[in-house]
Length: 509
Image (cartoon, rainbow, N blue to C red; front, side):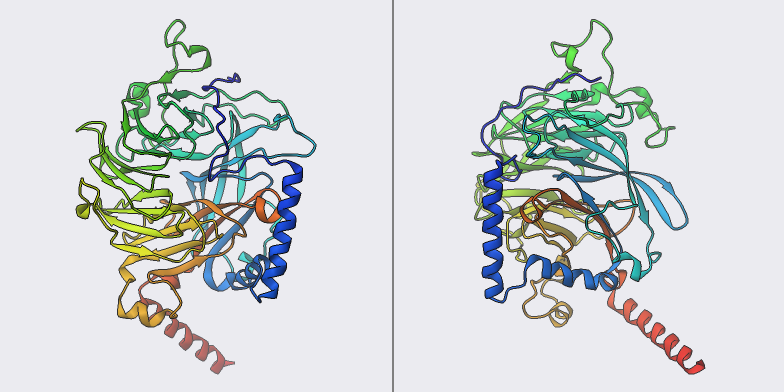
């Protein structure tokens, strides 16, 4: 289980949104430039990153119901919730997937520091349990007691993306700097120690089909065990791992996570040319229509045959595997720059979100899109000051979504509030329409985040802090105060009740 196996990585220049090891001289030069910018900013009376962070931290007891801060020695480019493992009176225990990317080290220059896929157990505190004075008392340089490493998989290359398979709680897929998608049974994989020179763990399944590196675009289908990927070869590739599902994993009498692996193990003499490296699987379809790198993909929530993709060609493309391998709808100019991310509304099949290097998030209604490429967004959400890296609809409310960007912010939006009188009256004139919460706990680009489907309004987010601190990253698990998102009349009634209680106590005193 410890042999290197995926297709040889094809090095063709640095990826746009990843971070490659940098020479020490370049790193020092960047630090000098950063210091110079900070001095210029202070002269212009602009608050520094640290000043903004200090201001945010002072407001944590007011803005949040719960928050956990987890320092990462190595940066992580992805974070995902796994299955809920246990429910208790005051907190739940849940799987959490993240990675540790081996970066440039002045003492280790031969690449022998391993990259790892980390499976952690996270204690998620229930709503209205944590004391306000406690949630802001954390050390930025320490690891959180709520996040405990359960297992380490030594990954062949950087872990750029992690996605979990809804049909089996023990299966995740990863993207690295290679053409292959790697499938892992996290329960069956042995726990490894990330020591210098350690050999790679062996994937349980390798999905082949790309002709060039596929680094970021990765999605799992919510309805069937399908996997979708996009890459530098400008193609979107679809796989079905149905043939590798065992009857044990699909037995309806088994609870989630209790069945066996969905990945069949080849018997001696069976399999393919990659048998020595683990089983591999070819694609069900390869879809062509982009003119540049495909940056993100997502499935239609109600169909394994329908999906969409975005790329560096500024295009949003909708596909239907039932009608062929060409686009069914192609929006030629979805944004004014590269598109980085896309998500399909799980509550409404017609609504699609896109995020771009033009700093905006746009919402499209597919009923307004036509096959000749004409189509404009329903709305442009303008609240970021740098490239948007991730967008995701909330599982808790159909009109709510989040967006994270290189400006270090994770914005929470509600498009139902756009243009309404209540929203216009409650927000300041400078606040973007639809923006009702801004998570400012990260001090560098927020590369990924994930809503928790098991714990409403709970989010995990991760930032790559190399540009501000010179290394590492920050993982944060947080839940905004319910006074922020609940209906206004409910909140006012509760506050009035609390006011009456305070007055009553003061009178008795």
